[in-house]
Image 1 (cartoon, rainbow, N blue to C red):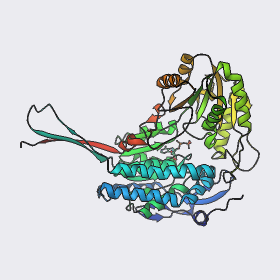
Image 2: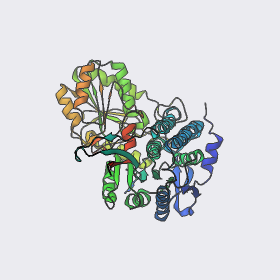
Image 3: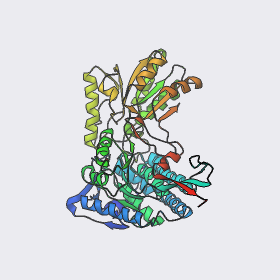
Image 4: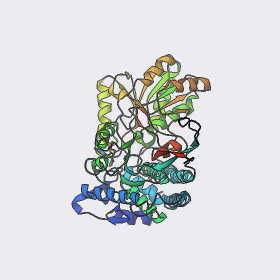
Length: 496
Ligand code: ADP
């Protein structure tokens, strides 16, 4: 059945989208416009006003003012909770338009956006609405004053003005994962969506205003990384950066943030291993491993892109995996029959295809896919590569596309050391019916998040982030909230 876009989506995409500074939607000259390209067609589907460095500065100043005037941080925890809960309700009410924007602008599958990402964004606001009333310090008995009477306690404070620099692969969820805990902590925010995917973040901005977030507390300025991103990360008025993106850009942010020693949360790249033991349930594992790499067309930081299969089942497993991969239906996201959508852009598609060509030159063999699909938009076949060596670029670099490299292993010690032989340490999965072995392996893998008999499932209750060069800090859970807090210790001499 042909999908008919909602009236709200048609209206939203038919007008040039302004950006949000201090509660006002502001426009800029046409020369600064950012085109929004539908990855499924390559067509321009909307236009967004791009912010200049001056606009970024105005957004930062608005956030600073709102923080210093305490318009948000002094609301009671219960008042903050009510507003965050309202944001979640509004996200659900506007689920169709948000999901449609994720498909049109980000190349998502409509079903995945409507039933996965939109509810996850709503849940993020609800989860942190609950924490506003539970962010408690503690009292301590101290020793350094001897028996003199002291009352000592700790309390949390918001970290201040937070710059949020978003990636293009999960625009709505990433915005929600950062905004919800930052607002729950009492921070003011400047958000820069990725140039490729501004629409759902701007729409979320409208919902935040509607829910009653005071002017200046959330400012949204689309623009390039080198102009708007740099202005935010260099500004002395910004106390913290929360970034999701590539490891290379994460390292640049370290440099930019050092002027005023900003706090940094960095959610960076990965090259996550999936380890399949001979005693696994083969059919379910083939399906799960494929979903772990091909969901979101592999443009997912935790994608299970390195597969290690225990030797006795290697041949049969690869044969089933190739068959499964060849049956994945690829196409535009509004057609319910499609299981994998396009890549985000022509440039990115070329980069992914380049990795495959390079791998073939180095001796790897394409067992499934490997090519572009000849039609409009940025589509390619889900790809499985065999005859891969651990040292090949395809086995070490983050491809960020639907490309899986498969290798055999003979013993657990060997596979654990190969799985750990990476600069990254974001995620891992183990597939086995032996729970004890699963725990033993997981315990030795240097990764921030591990799954057993599944791969990629996120949850607000489970802290998310990486070891090694996959990042600093965690999102989600209480740990995610504390990234937006400072702690104060107070020692009161009550004999005075
Ligand atoms: P990708 O290469 O996949 O686009 P990036 O890490 O470059 O991934 O981009 C993630 C986000 O970081 C985007 O919003 C982008 O605009 C922003 N960005 C890129 N370069 C910089 C920079 N030098 N300073 C701040 N933000 C940047």
